[in-house]
Length: 124
Image (cartoon, rainbow, N blue to C red; front, side):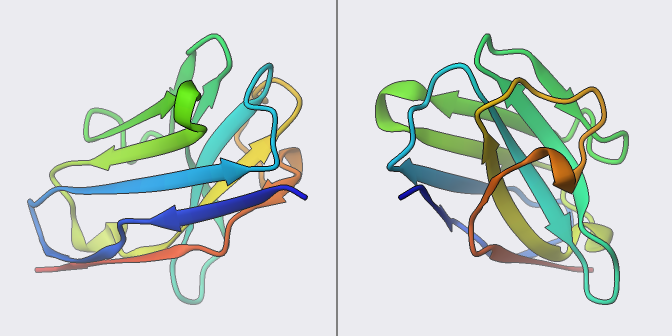
């Protein structure tokens, strides 16, 4: 059974950093796509970043230059380093995975497995 578990969420002041981690268990961490999504209160879930098994990455325009997605295959762990955080980054952040390669457009329908989420709150 595939399980994704996020950690590292919390509260931070605007301009500060935060790093999210996601550990995958029961999942072959090869030839797949891993991604981060977020959902602010009252809004739809949106894609933040993705990374393919060859290391190719993709980012939403709103986080380019501030967020970095990476993975440590040996530990089946996905990371999201978030710098220069803004109040509008406040949301529940979700880790996602799919056995297929990363889609051209980051969509919730392209990912089969999901974590429970980690809350990130950025205060001004």
